[in-house]
Every structure is written in C-alpha cells, then in structure tokens.
Image 1 (cartoon, each protein chain N blue to C red):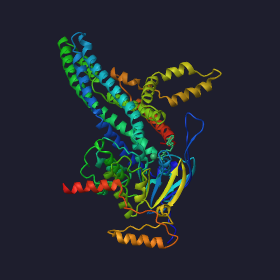
Image 2 (cartoon, chains in turn yellow, cyan):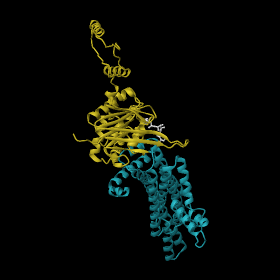
Image 3 (tube, chains in turn yellow, purple):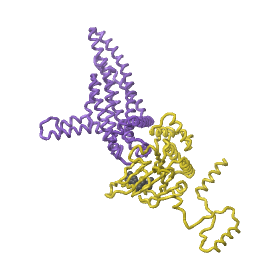
Image 4 (cartoon, each protein chain N blue to C red):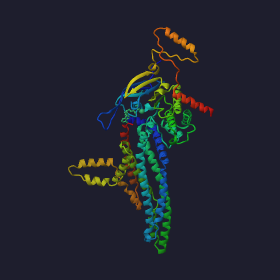
Length: 288
Length: 309
Ligand SMILES: Nc1ncnc2c1ncn2[C@@H]1O[C@H](COP(=O)(O)OP(=O)(O)O)[C@@H](O)[C@H]1O
Ligand SMILES: [Mg+2]
C-alpha cells in the first residue's frame, strides 16, 4: 500500500481567545495534534469547556489557529476548498426555522453546487436515511431535538463528503434518538466514511469509535486505539451461559490449585440501564 | 492571490451568492414583510381621496392633487425601503451567528464574500420587488387621476373660451405631473439610496455587537447624509488657499468616502414638483450607488473574513 493522505491532520494546534476582562488570553486549545486516517472513527472525549468544539472549529476554518495548523485531506483548513469533502454537524444545531426539512437539505445541497435531479434524489435518499420522510414538509421550527440532530446529520452528508465532523451528536437526545444516531454513525463507518466526533458521554464514544483522544483543559492527555487503551492487560474475562453450579465450583477449585492466579471478581454481568430501557421499549413497540 | 482565485471562480461565486440571496428573500417573505404593501395601498387610496378639490382655486387644483399622490407615494416608498434595508440587514447577520446557522453554511465550501453578498442582495431583491409593486400601484392611481384632472381642466378651459394653443400647453403641463419617465427615475433613485444604506448597515453589523446599535447608527447616517456635504463645506472649508487646506481636503474626502452623500438624491423631491430628471443625473446616481455598494461590501468582507465564531 502506498502512503495515503490523512483525512484529518492537526499539528500542534494552539488557540487563544482574547478576554476583555483579563489581560491574559484564554488558552482554549494547547498544543493538540491529531491524525485520523481515512475510514477511521475517531472520538474526542473530555468534559465541557476542554476545547473540543474549538479544535473542530479550527479544523473547519471557523476560527484561525494562534499557532499550528490543520488540514483536511491535505488541504489547509484556511482555504475554502478544504471544505469540499467535509460535512459538519455543530453542537446543538439550529437551522432556519422557516424552511421545511426538505427545503433545508435542498438549500445546503445547492450551496455545495448540487442541482436538479441529482439534488432531488440525494435529498430523498438522505431523508430516508435519517428517517425523516414523514416530516419532510414540516417547518424545522416544529422539530424535536432528536429530529434537529438528524436533519443536521443529513445536511452534513449532502454532498457525499469523505469526512464527517460531529460535535456532540447525541447531546440532549433521548436514548431512542441517540440510538438512531449511533446506528447512523455505524452505517457511515460501513460505507468507509471517516468520522470525527466529540462527546462527553463516554459510553457512546466507546461503542462507536475505534480511536479515541482524551482532552482536558485544552491538552491532549491520552490518545490511541480504543482496544489498546481500555484493555486491562493482566486480566482475562470468561463469560459463561447456562453454567451449572458444579462446573463453577470445579473451575474455582482449579484456580485455587494453580499457583500465581487470583480470582478477582465473580458474578452476573449487568446490562446497562440504557440497554434495559431500549429492550423494554422495543418490546412495548412490538406488542402494539 | 485571493483576487485571482475569485476571478477564476466567478460562475461558482454567482451560483452560491444567488442561492443565499434567494434564501434570504424567502426568509424575509416568510417573515410576512409583504404585509406592509396592504398598508401602502391604504395610504395611496387615502392620498387620492383626502384632497378632493373643493377648497382650492380651480386652476391649481388638478396638478396639486397629482403632486400630493406622488409625494405620499414616494414618501411611503422611502420609508419602507429604508426600514427594510436597515432593519432586515442588521437583523439577519447577528441572527445567523446567534442561531449557529452560520457554522453550517461556512462549513460548506462557501467563501465568506459569497455569504455577505448573498445576504445583501437578498434584502435588496425584496426591496426591489416591493418598490416595483408600489410603483405599479402608484402609476395606476396616478394615471386614473391624471385622466380625470385632464378632462375636468379641459372642460373648464373650453367653458372659459381659452385659445386652442393655451389648452395644449395646459394639457402638457398636467401630463407632466402624471406618471412620467422622471417619476420612474425617482423610484429608481429611492431604490439606489436603499441599496447604499443597506450595504452600510451590513458593514456596521459585521463589527457591532447589537442589532439595536446597527439600526440606530444606520438611521443616523442616513439623516446625516442629507447635509453631509454642507457640513463638510462649513467645517472643513471647501475653499482653497487657507494654510491647512490640504489637510481639510483630505479629511473632507475621507468623510465623503465613509459617509455617503445623499444630497444628490434630493432630485426626488424636485420630480414630485413636476421637474424633469435628466438621464445623466440618473446615471450619476447609479454610479454613486454602485460605488458605495461595492465599497461597503468589500469593507464588510475585510472585517468579516477575520471574524471568528
Ligand atoms: N469565541 C470564544 N471566545 C472566547 N472564549 C471561547 C470562545 N469559544 C470557546 N471559548 C472558551 O474556550 C474554552 C473551550 O471551549 P469549547 O471548545 O467550546 O469546549 P468544549 O467543546 O470542549 O465544551 C472554554 O473555556 C470556552 O469558554
Ligand atoms: Mg463543545
């Protein structure tokens, strides 16, 4: 394989914001470097105010870096053409209230230079993908939070970008809606689209991302492949189904007999509250 | 470098600017801006009926009514075009920033100049369409009224036994107060003035932090524009020869560059009185309008290009 151009390349990004009160500028992002290869799903996690959104805005050329540089598929973020192949869903997106869902997608499509029959079929396809076909003619002003987030995702995908940047895609969305969004991210991944998302909801990042970066107070504290980061190297998990008490007793005896091994924990694996909720609501839906 | 890339990509720029302009137009229409047209129709009808020609001397009656119709119509046009230009322009940009819709637009391959030009042209399109509708209404009413006046006055003159050539002169005079080309020129002048003030409001809104500030300052500059030339003359001295004259002249030039001179637009009032507006005056007004439009648009771009959100 030849060396491919990274989808996202952020080199030693520093961003200061001027504050009117203090002399000292506020350093929102401090020497952050991120490289995302095509096809990866990268999650940036960190608490509120740690500089996630600012990093993304710098990547999109919405703010100018104080130092360092960003590029998308090798094109500098400060150039307009770097945005040809990127779709962006901002934090808490909000669209023109007076447009319907369909008109919104049409507007963004035309901004990307798509016209006519091609635009029509693309809008159709995306409305289908984000499950808003029924709401297509309703004004955005009446959309729920989850619907806004989904129309935002559709808008980001309008010109079939190779990179999608999602700022807190599931913030403020109920578990069902957030599940839908997660499924959409999986679909993007299957199609080979690079995804760069950020969140403060760790569980969700864990579910979809294969690479993560942890950012805290503007600094990157840890970065790498998810599996490597969260594996506990000296432990092994064994989950059995329908195991008899005798078998378990036997295994425990075996462990005791063998030296240098320690049984750390034993019990039933718990499902998450979220999974429980989803399972029960989907049961409800089926019985109706 | 930026300039070259702009020239090469002109068709694409036009396309995107048109998309944003069209969207802005739709946005304003859906904000029910056109309702004021009904209001305008009422004003027009009122101006037609209030001045029933009883209490005036019979000779001046006809043209007086016609002048009144024009005066009211053009005043209403000026007011509406001014209010829409200023309020809509100073509202739209901060609204996009606040609602974060601007992020989604600038995250697409949309140069910032296209966004600004699109917004401005969208507002101007709305102003243009409104003025055109008002113009049609005005011309319609004026035409009707002119015909009535013409009939009445001719009958009156015949009754008094005026010589034929005097009647021809009278007819020409009355027609001069009806819907003339000069009147159309005055409507265009109203539009040009609105275009200048809208682009000024755009410039202000790129750096002001409140819509209210932009609106108030725009209105102030509009009023100042009508005596700006006099003020320059008075305070900075139009005459040569004084020791600090070149400084004064530079200053005077600078003021003229930043603050538009609206004195030329006073021709609108003269047209109402039945004066003819020469084509070269319209040409001069167009050039002046275009100059300020481009100057303010590029100044806005200069500020907006550096802006962070
Ligand atoms: N436009 C701005 N002006 C001043 N400070 C800002 C601006 N944008 C963000 N900040 C500050 O930068 C820091 C990082 O913000 P942000 O990137 O939005 O964090 P996150 O998205 O991780 O919650 C915060 O302290 C925030 O107050
Ligand atoms: Mg954020």
